[in-house]
Each structure stands twice: as structure tokens, then as C-alpha cells.
Length: 316
Image 1 (tube, rainbow, N blue to C red):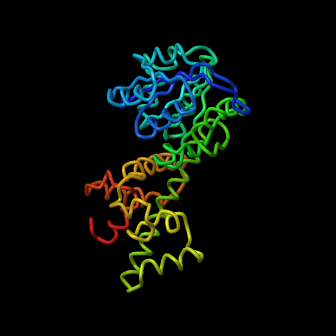
Image 2: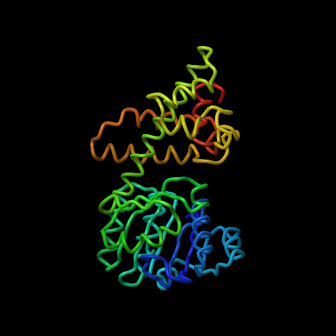
């Protein structure tokens, strides 16, 4: 497992519509989780952290957090537990493992998993949580590292109306948009469908700009046309993959930062698994998955997913 964090939260003052929880656990202190934890500290939350990455722990302790020793300590003390973990296996281990959250959490604890995993994983954890009188929701996020840092994430939440309402005031300290998508697993479903479409649209945008330039068309002129015409999309307008069209996107920064190709391939793999299980045809999603796996195989796993433009140009 990559990391764990524990948060203990005491609202310094009233938050409109908030239900005040005295103690919150947060598990998973990677690039996203660390920023989320720091935003809770900015809201004057009392924070206790644990992480296998000692430097990550020290970083948060210097910002005002305390530390804990293990998952059992998180679970015994917390009224709410938030997790931000890398994969299906990590989520299952943290929640359902021998010494996991479900084995030690107090009755009626609210569990909020912001990892991106297969909807069936969220549903399995929710079922086991319910058997132990625990409350579970899935709440994957959109927006990436910058939004995590700025506290402007979008949360896609799956769970009961009551659990959603109880979680909302906490998630509002971390994001600007909190959407109830339906029952447990529907947050994950929304996230996977969105990211599959994003990958397809990015590849299509990269293809169009590559063709335009091969035909002799200036990329900035093509961007102006596309973004005022029917081909306009987020990938062309706000995250253009061609260097120099937009100044503050990864393509103009050597494809550094942003949303990595490894993460995109992971989400596409989850979408492929869900499509196989539900017998849903996703020909373009499957092709996008293979393209991003090829980009990774060529050594660009740490680049932003818009680097697919360079792949299609044959420059990587």
C-alpha cells in the first residue's frame, strides 16, 4: 500500500448546513490526498496523519498535523473516515483486510472512499460495511492535482441520501461541486464514463490537430476555428494538446503535471472491465485503452495524457 493518513477534525466554527464531526480519519496521502489533507488543515481541522511515506507524514506534521500508528487506530477513533487510494486492491485491503477499517471502526462510522475503482468494489465494501452497522459512500473526484490543491474538486457521490447529506459539508471543504449520482457505485460509474469520454476526445483532438498541421494549417488558427465550431470540446478549448496554443496547460510545459497517462490507462482499464462485465460495447474506449498502454510502453508513463498528440505525430 502506498500510503495512509488519519485526520481528526474539529470545526473551529459553524459551517452553514454542517454536521459537526469531532474526529475524521483520512487514509491515503499521495499527490491528491496530501493536498486534500492540507485543505482540511486550512479549515482549522485538527489533523492526525499516518503514512508509509515518512516524508509525507513529516510534511503534514510541519503544517500542523499529528500522527497515528496504524489503521486500527484510525478506525477506533474516527467518526468519519475518508480514503484516497490507488487501486481496487488497495481499497479492498484497507477496508476488508484482516486489520482493515471494517474490523475496527465504531458503529455508525461514515466511510467516504474517494479512490477511483470498479463500481463493484465500492458495492462490495458497502455491503460488508452495512453488515457491521457502518455507512459507506463512494466519492471519486475530478479536477486533478491542481483542483485538489485549490480545493475545487468535483465529487461524484454514490450512496444513500442521508449519507450523502452527512458527507456533503465535509466534502465542501475540499471541492467546489458535490454531486449525488445515486446508490453506492454510481459515483464510480460517473467517473469512469467521464474519463473514458475524455480519453476518446483527447485522442480525437490530437488527431485533428496533427492532420491540420500536416495539411499546412496553423495550429492556432485551427484552434480558433474548432473552438467556435461544432468540433469544440474540453480537450480543444481548455486543455489543448498542442504546445504553445494555451500557456498554462501541460502541453506547453513539456507535458509535465496534469493527469498522467498511467492514471488514464488505469481508468480506461476499469471502464473496460465494467463494460465486459455488463456486456456493453465500447469500441472507442477499448481502442483508447490500447493507445494509452502503448504510450506508456514507450516510456511516457509520467507525462500528462495529452502527450498522445506527440505519439500520433510519431515523435515519441
